[in-house]
Image (cartoon, rainbow, N blue to C red):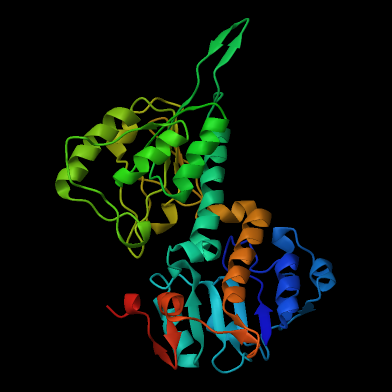
Length: 371
């Protein structure tokens, strides 16, 4: 069983899908590991560290590979030489990169989309969306704090008192919860909102103030796997009114709302931005999926009405070392959980296998891609 790790080619991608730690663990399972030369440089991992862990470092690791690991799905031409039926295990963006998924099928590869991992207890350690979103929420607050022209915590000095910054987090998934925690650590007054009523207690547990629509009853906003769903027009109108009044008082706003397979929902309009104080900052974590904020542009600081709007297309890539370490553990936890010692390879069960498998036997097989 040979596991190959390619250098990431996507623009702005600094992460790598295996660490020296996970290479050692794969080798302990009986696998051979081949790493493309330079694959870890942007994540502060040298070729020598991979060699010390027992991996082969070469220019073309894919030849003879049974499993190819990636942060983002490799282009099909990079897979030439892999064994027939080889697994491609990565964040594949199946909705956004459907042509690539079709190409994997045509080439006979078994493509496993790690972002399709079901949110069940036994799969938590395999969930790349959670591990990377956690870091993204942290980084979003730091970037916003850096752009904000004032201090976050309240400071009482001989020259007078500096008021604490007011930070509002919109969307309380993994990224939102970490954003709340980080802003609190920096000393801000934090509030948060979400369409899922179950998140109210989570917000309060982190010491933040929940901002929720109370006048529209019976709307829970939670879909399969704990993800948010689209809301009724009545709820959206009530939420917009509440949020508009609240946003006008904020110094920092972090937006994190995403719906799998759909464009990011619009949370903040240009008119709402115009009500904010000059010098305020908005970080749009969903900018790569169309953005939660009107006018946000990936990897640029846009200034509108005196408000700075920013959002990285790939926020975890700005914390490459830690993001790579966590991503690599997610992949190892996944493959090792299904490792069959007698066969010397992983054998998937139906629950997780059917959820993440996009292609098999020359066909696209995932129900989410066949609708």
